[in-house]
Every structure is written in C-alpha cells, then in structure tokens.
Image (cartoon, rainbow, N blue to C red):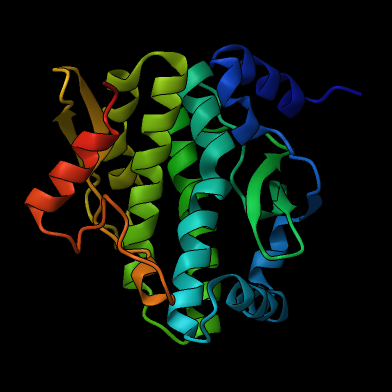
Length: 248
C-alpha cells in the first residue's frame, strides 16, 4: 500500500536530478533500523566503539563529533529535500525515521514514513527539527561527555549544506539557500547563523559553498588533515582549496 510519505518521496525524487537520488534511497548492504535508536545510550555507545575502528582513535569527543557530522546531515535530508522541491515536508522526527545503518556504524541516509502537517511548512519543519536535534545532540553529548554547543554548530552547517545540495539538485540553489536563515531562526535553538560563500574558479565560473561554523575534528584522527572548508584553516588557505574544488 502506497502511503502519503511514499508519494511525497516519489515527487521529491521526480524534482531532482537522477544522479542525486542516492541520498534519499536505501543503499546496498544497509539495514533499516528505527530512528529512535539514536536516543538509546547503549546503541550510541556502540556506534562510538565501532567508529573507533574506522578512525583508529579512542578519543570520545573526536568519535562523537565525526559521527554527528555525518549523521546530522543524513537525518534531515529527506525533510529538507521534500520541503525545497515540493513545499511539503517529510517528517524528521526520530520516531518517523528508518535509519540506513551499516554494521560499521555508518549512516548513509534515512527513510521518513510520515508527512508533517501544521500551520506552515517552514514552521512545522522547524519545530520537528528542533525536537530531533535536541534529542540527538543530547544523546551524542552524553555518550562522549562533551559540550552540546559544538554539536549545534554542526547542525547549522548540516542544514545549510543540505539546503544547498537540494537547491543544486533541483536547479534552484539561490531560492533554496535563502531558506537557511529563516529556518534556523525558527528552530530557536543555540545555533549560529548559517553562512555561504561564493568562490570563483580558475576558469571564471563561480560556485556557492557552505561557510562552515563547525569543525568535524577529522584532523584529530591519526593520519588525517583538516577539511578544505574547515573553519580552522586560514581564510586564504580555505579560499584556495575551495577554489580548486569549484567547477572549471
């Protein structure tokens, strides 16, 4: 039986480039597990243990931050994409999500089984995102015994990046990214403002990037370096690296 959520996902997929469909569909080898597991202290502790095998570190703050840096985007992608493409919103509430989980702790996406209703799509999305982010950040913070504020900054970058991705996938990046500030404001949480920066390539074309407010701490893992967009890099270095990544 086809549900409203199934229909909305299909409309969302129809509205974006086929090459981008992978972010919204289960991938080969994943298991679909309840989103409510994010709230489970035992499950979260196990994700940290599994993540230590990937990054070869036992530093809890690094493992939790790296997990959240990836998971935060995965948790919100269907909701943000459906909002941008159709104006309706697939629910990001943990109870409505099925995680695309791999046994090594990776989340490659989520499936939402419900559609939000409410006064306006933006307000409904903001309220549901606040609930999901509050619960998820509390769980990750407790698992690593770390402050929540850096995790909220990652959530801001996840929202900004997801809106940019959805806008590009639909062909309307300016319209989609214009939603970032009002959405983060409506969430009404301890989040920094979302930011973007436009970088010109060597060929003279330009591309919009998320100007990150958060650090994923990747460089704290053995053998790893800072990301090209890391706010810990100097502005000149970050600009040069992003310029290399811009389409030629």
